[in-house]
Length: 103
Image (cartoon, rainbow, N blue to C red; front, top):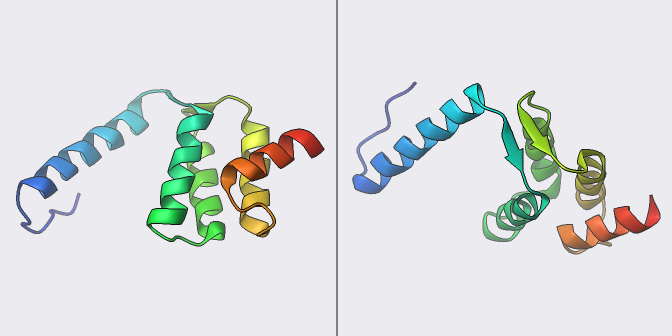
């Protein structure tokens, strides 16, 4: 792992958490709740202003990890696809409702 440049206590704490998450993802089964995923999408979109296609790509890759489980994965993946391809659904939750109703 590449050492982080000095930036104070917050970076040390952040790096410690990052190391713990990395270890967890490598060694344990991780169960993600749909509600948590929706919040992650919201933060990536509204706070970090990531493009929807990038959000779709990153989260889909994460969900494809062997040890990551999520309820209704098919609906979640279709929701991410709809969300990334259209502005008709202004929010991830709207896209999820569309998927549940129309698919």
